[in-house]
Length: 112
Image 1 (cartoon, rainbow, N blue to C red):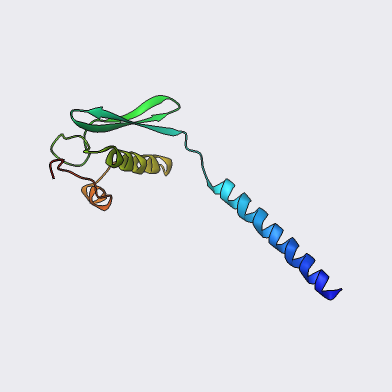
Image 2: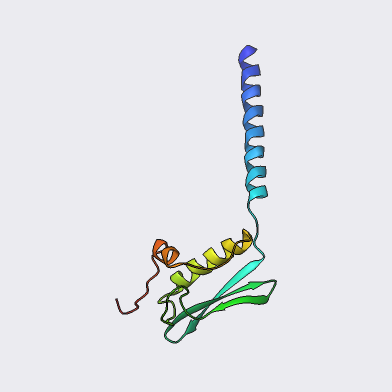
């Protein structure tokens, strides 16, 4: 009898723990109102960031560098667009630095 009670308690506790985890995950996952579109430009890629279907940012070139060159690949454009969206959601300036380009391993010379 004692063992049955322990099993019931463990089952109940486990069920409650699962419900708490599911609730926590659904409450912390925010569905962003921002959307990204990667597009081709001048033998490379750029990105647009929209909010409720209104374009906020259109970036044809890699930000933070002097030369006006597009991203070498879609993945790099997407990485930086995601970083900009993260900053917008945190309500900080959506600027990108050279250090952030390096941290995200953004290719700056498409020939290499």
